[in-house]
Image (cartoon, rainbow, N blue to C red; front, side, top):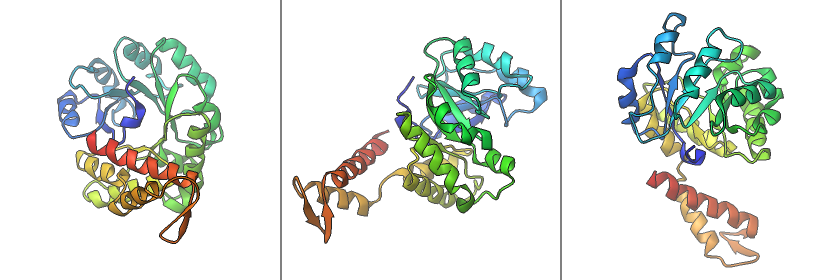
Length: 269
């Protein structure tokens, strides 16, 4: 599987619309997610499964299958097990044992991205993130709000986002993917949501429209002031020092190094 850290702005494409696969890959997205779940009507599931392929791009291709317990789950697993996808996205992840069963069915080498989309999923987030086959966690914020009956606002979702970031860190995973921004006609909204997610410790954000890609990447890119601060901190030498009236020591330098590394990584991907 590709390095999950490189996947900052993956783009969904309905798996029953193969004419969109190449367009999604050409959008600038870090990865393409062929969706068998929410984007595909029940009557089109079989056709979507038959259209799956990974040879249309050099970028990572993921597949979001239908959740365990749905009528399409077993057939989805049979289809994706035969193909060289970068990873399999599992919606409604709630039970670590179910994820381990999926991993056993897919065989070695298939990495899972576990979607936290319910109260039970959040309650089990740390155990889910610790499943060996799970390479990353993603937040299905809209489904999560539907499950709780809450508003889809930053305030309502703050605790859930914190727990998902914490669960990923405790399991030694790369920072998680934040949920989608439903506004597709104003890239500035996606960019602002991405900046907010980065502040909380997320490492990327799911995209549902090509015009969101560059906005999301920009939101995860440290701004000029952060980069200037990081350089100044690292120029301060070793041990305790003062930079712009603030004390600097090794933990601060670790953050400065992270900012500079991220600015280079995102700019070159």
